[in-house]
Length: 216
Length: 291
View 1 (cartoon, rainbow over the protein chains, first blue to last red):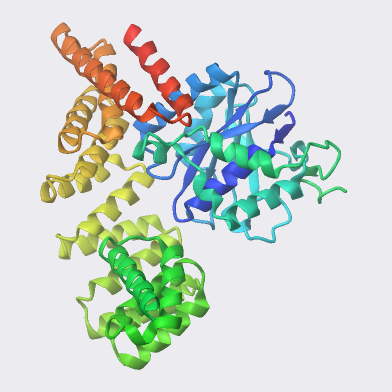
View 2: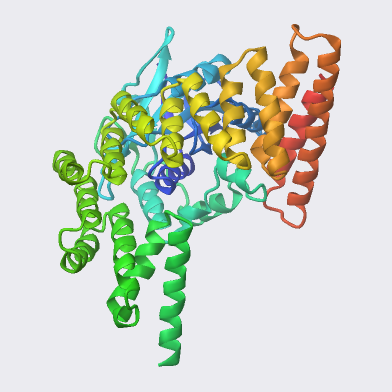
């Protein structure tokens, strides 16, 4: 199907979410501020849970609240991500498929993204992610050549920097928000930090297609 | 100097508190513990052994095998032949993913002491780490037949069942936990979530009751508050309920809505940070109460 582009902001937050809870499965929603039609541009993400992913109430609550927030901010939910606690198995779980199905009801070319925990070592050269798209009624692996991250090396470095400085603990997922509702699951603070670290965009530098090594 | 021994006192107290609370803040424990061991060992007296144990486990958690190894050697030297130290050696093998060797280690403990619960539970952890959920569940069930009072094990089993989407059995485990811990709001709330997930009118009503119970035990449990709101709303909206039940549930949902609004207004005071989340909740609640 179509091309998918993953922004630095979305990738960094997803990655930090997985790093923040290394012993848990974590999940979240992928958002886009671009209009529907054409390539899917994942411009942001909302980290959701690190406990009891298969249980319904909090997931439903989170989906509803994120829906409302998206309407307020002209964004759409275009996908779902998950990182499994067990790093040896990065395949989508039944609950991942279920939530992705629900998202696909509202969004034609929704994506399901699994973070491959086994490939997250500091010297990884390629983004540790696997993407699925819906073909007929099944989620099938996306062709790597249709997935793009601009400024991959910079993105990867930003993620490492935030880990080293301990700033990844700024990340708030929906679970943490429910533990303390003064904490902001839209992560404005962390977003600002990431923007600070990102240099002005130069579209032609360091574009990474998952199917090829990093281009220069 | 005075301030140096103050510092080591403080660090010692921190470690003790984290031990008592069973906190898994391994990075912090390694930070504090490593300094304490390297620079202030002489001041620790007999505490040093339990600190070695605590730091070793934290070090394994942070892939600091160098530090874990050091602690283990000290403990081996001081307590030769100890089962407790043998278990720590087993945990190190687990951390290195040498599961067969670790299993053998635990088996040797169990040969000498078949009632050693720690070794049995480590063996189950290995199954879990290997992704062998069905086996882990089976072993844990067997374990609980013998050690029926082990809360940690019941909770672990409930988590395993939830991950396997076996909500009925998860509920059973949580019922055990609620029986033996009637004042624990978390168990009530988790039980309610499982019931809600199972779905159907009867389970929804049960979930509403247990969300309410969790709130009675802790009126600041936001999951329970939202859960009450959602379960009551769904019951009220169901075509299968009569007017009385509908009315009652609308009342519960409205009460929950007000409590949620209050909580968010309070939370939103003085912080610009969470304005987005506050607004999202407000709108969500508005939209449901209008329908």
